[in-house]
Length: 158
Ligand SMILES: [Zn+2]
Image (cartoon, rainbow, N blue to C red; front, side, top):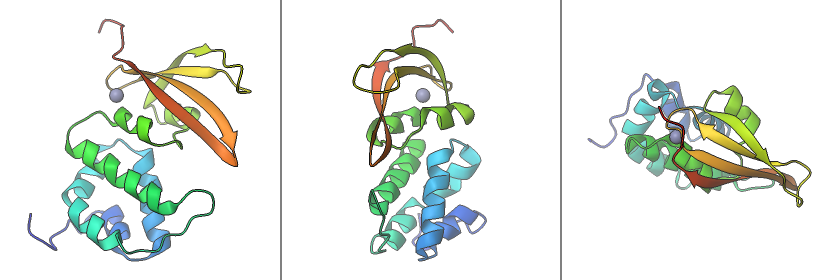
């Protein structure tokens, strides 16, 4: 890829390259929420430029560093580039809310497991794209978090 050539038709690419903290963080949360190839493909083509444009940005963050969220958004774009299922991203970030992921039709909840340490039971989720299953512990420490554990490929025949 030629340096400096990016797809100007993607508003999220423009946000990432804007140098404006608020626009960059808006784009970060959009990437967290999507598996749509139409959204992710232009970002993947621009990922080197995005990485460079954002590396010196001071993003701040109250409870968890926005820089870490940005790094994770870039990881997510790279997972897409490797043609890996985006459920692989759950293992490396604690802000994947089970209910939001269910509403986005990325996973479905197929069961629960009692968890005496928490006020909600763990949930067993199945990725709607690849069938992989995860057990998700939900907890709260200053802010809610979700800890996704890989249970392996789904057992249901397809
Ligand atoms: Zn998956």
